[in-house]
Amino acid sequence: MQKRSDFYFRYPPNIGELDLATMVNMFRTRGEPRKAGPGQHFACAMSGHLLREAKSWFGLYYSQKTWDNLLTKGSEGFPLTDVELNVLGLVYVSEDEPPHREYVEKNSGVTEKLAYLIVNDLRQFGFLDEDDSGFLRIPPRGEKALHGISRRIYEKRFMPEMLKTFTPTEEPQIEQAQKEDREQTSLF
Figure 1 (tube, rainbow, N blue to C red):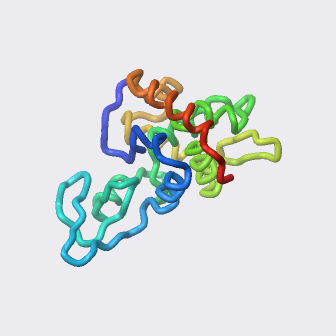
Figure 2: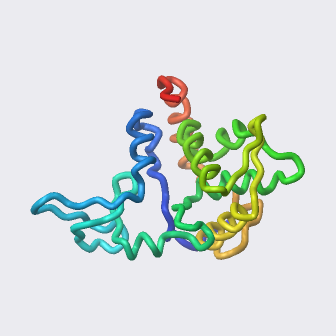
């Protein structure tokens, strides 16, 4: 399925190169307002305008107006990407038999440790439910967010064909990052 828009949040393609502590820190501080130091400015990643205050996303900065426009309808202020589309979509398409968390993390399209953080955030925000055995279900709130991000990217409600959002040129980087991911020590 062809993407219709590039106007949404994205994780950097080389995020797997970061050490675990840096990745966790960048993930936890995304969306926090930052003030530029004296005599310095930020540039908005979309508009290119210089800003004294901006919201950060993995090293990129956005004006408040751009940030608000990037937020997806139905996301309730949570910044959704194509990775969240994959995670929510994997759970949504397997309604008969809920997938295990480990399966979803491995097939999310990013390193397993970043996928772990994403699944936790989606759970805490109420977009996913997890039972004691680690099986995931999607509540109505998660369905609304899933349809919102699929409309943003594809201009259609979610369909299972949308789960393949990563191009083949990105797959070797992901595999390499996952290999390095297994070699890192764990903070969890």
